[in-house]
Length: 458
Image (cartoon, rainbow, N blue to C red; front, side, top):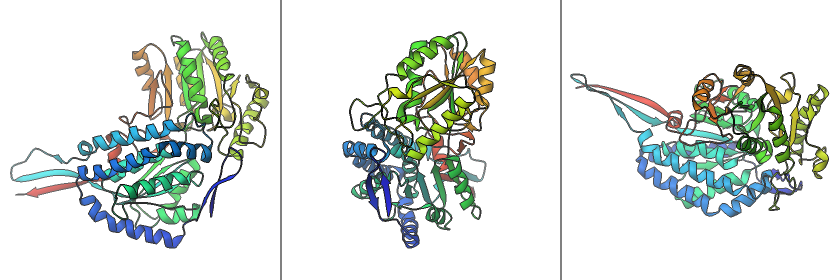
């Protein structure tokens, strides 16, 4: 049995039977068998099914929001926003599918007809995490289905009800048998699934360690593998930044979802001319946060997903302080924040440097380190001093300079005056240890299809 332990109170919120090797075989047979019929449909025909699927999920958004909160601890006041984002991304990707998947015909050479088509990869295994259980999975599921692939979803044991919701929606939408299926798998059986000859591609979202495990499971296969991994996302506050809005947005970007976001703000570099005012404002807002039971309406920061995750962040904070860092937010202000508990107060660290893990290793929790810098050159050097490269944000009123600096930053996405956001019209991708491959946007369809060329002599 799988058991989902709620971080709210440590209770078993949900349990289900774990799938085994026999279930994997049956699921793959159905998925492979459904390919011919599903891929033969037109894009518009598939769009009717997938749109209905999305609508069925959205119908239950209030119940789903409560389930999300119980499963992973995000405040109930924030959980409904995830379903809104799910619908937004899905609707956009459905809307651009026909254009993204259209054939490309070359100008005829005398006596020849030449063109290229996008064809589905086949059976896709989608492996999704718990932190944004709908927003991470929709990036893969919807374009994969729209492109004519069949999908097997393995969701985190922390959020298995998300997979169950998807399965119910697919059934109500009338998907042909085998087009979309779910499996509850442990690590061993997950490796067995993705290494199976009938699996034609893998799309994974999770940690760097998880990404390496996925690669190791594919050593004997040559199949596409998309990896959306971790981040240590930086922000740079330039001397000309609008201080009020910058502080407000960066506090939110650091502590929303208890900092459990791959593109959340984990380190901030502030120009020396603004540093003191920035720190004062940042700490003032942080102290207004209310940590507590995420089912209560006034709470805006809930528990982390597990006690072990919270203790990992505590260890980073302790290590930084032992090396000279200072914490500017007194943990005693937050009654529930205590050792060996998933409840952890937000922390703002100063006097930090890159010898400290909190500035170089992914925290994935409510802590942020803030450093003073002298100029753009120093800031960009520090931003790039990382094994990760998912997103970065620049806070300035000079769009030309932001564009110039943005091209020097080693990340998949550069923001100006915003952070911790995905625009479905833009490619979502990372560099370095933040992964490989692309989801979302028109380019995202390139990674759930392969190109087939036709060269006909008349």
